[in-house]
Image (cartoon, rainbow, N blue to C red; front, side):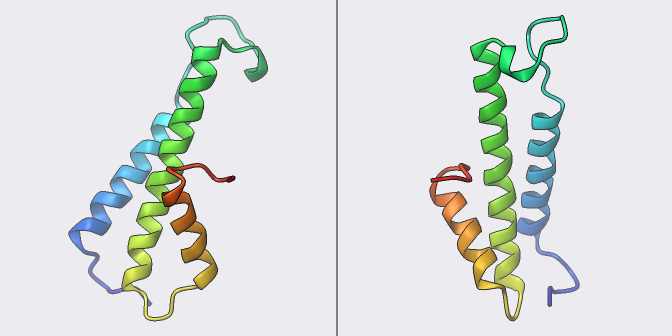
Length: 93
């Protein structure tokens, strides 16, 4: 169960997570023509991957902080989010 009034850190982490998600989903490559993602320039693929890692990291930090407020957090979710934070946003080792 989460407290009724979220703390200031919760609000900031949630806002950061939503902003990181918007940055990642609305990223557009430098080229103008329609290309599949596999045909993007390397700089565009790297930028998109960096934005995805930033989103994963922000989301994991937010969920870890929310788990601090819960009475009985799910251990699997906490372990998954902690490993994402340790790996700086990477989902796979």
